[in-house]
Image 1 (cartoon, one colour):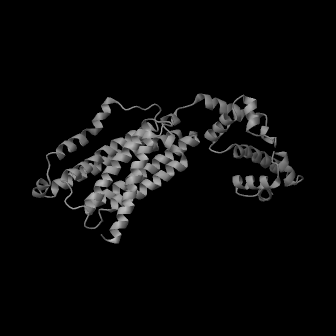
Image 2 (tube, one colour; image 1 turned 180 degrees about the vertical axis):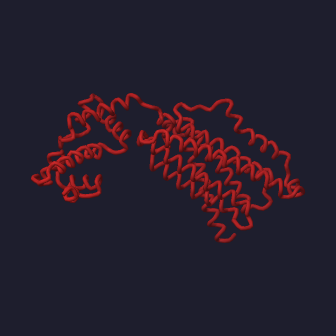
Image 3 (cartoon, rainbow, N blue to C red; image 1 turned 60 degrees about the vertical axis):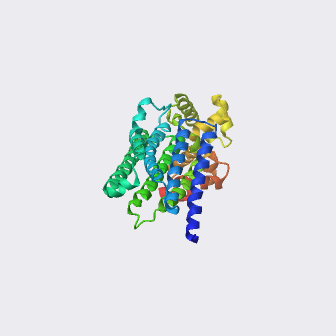
Amino acid sequence: MKSLDVILIIISGGGLIHGILMSLYLLTNKKNQGLSKSLMATILLLMTFRVGKSVLFYFVEDIEFSIIFVGLSILLLLGPLLLFYIKSITIPNYHLKISDINYFIPFIIILFTSFFATEQWFIENGKFWAFILLAFVYVHFAYFIYQSWKIVIKISKKRNEKLTKSQNTVILWLKNVIVGVIIIWLSYVLNIFEDKIPYILGPIIYSITIYTLTFIAYNSGVINFDGLIFKEDLNENGLFKNIDDAIRKDKLYLNSNLDLNTISKILSISIHKTSHIINDKTGTNFNNYINKFRIEEAKKIFSNDKDKQYKIESIAYDVGFNSLSTFNSAFKKLESVTPSQYRNLLS
């Protein structure tokens, strides 16, 4: 065996093993176990089988024709399952219905056909029917990728500025998943031109894609999310309004000792709950949220202090900062200029 073939086996084989281990982890991890995790695990297992078939087809001679046919038919499962996964993680309390079995009719037909179709039949009847079959399978998969993408885009536009941090994380994750699936889909469509594109390209691209998506999933923590993340929490909305009103109306941000504990005691809720609500509703942490109010207050002082009577350090302390350096860095982070540069721009 050539050294290049060994490398290809290691790369594609590693992706297969990784896909199997990930699917088993999703099925056995009891934390927030739900439909979305089960669907993702199923998709990974089916993709692993499909890619495994491709690896066998490339390295093993005289592979059983039925295995090739079944591997192709699995693509007819992946499209509907992807759509169900997208719905399960964007629609609160989403459940599969009995009528959803209709989505799998093409798979059932092709799978049933695999028991009767033979390689000899395809050879005798030319490449035309083989091309028609491939075209149908790939167009079918592409249709469900498109439908899945429409759902994600619709949610993005519908909720617009109202998206919470967690919801934004889910939408970004789903976009990455769909892009990953499109890349895998393209790699297999290119197999039609096997004389120009190496067949092993599909498993290699799958392996790279699955590694990348796994990294993104764990880095974002999205692996434990489900459709409930898009459920309107009226209680949290009300609590955030109370937090925001208290900070704005009473100008609590002017207190340099203001912290989560102070806010929590005022509203009689836990520190963890206060932190979660602020992070979720503003997309930033408590310190950045408070500093935004302080900097707006500082900008008002700068606007009214045309004669520059007050030192910048004095203003920093007046609006709630504990040090000039902290004020400078927070101001520049928000306004892209330092406080002194901002003051000079007003002159």
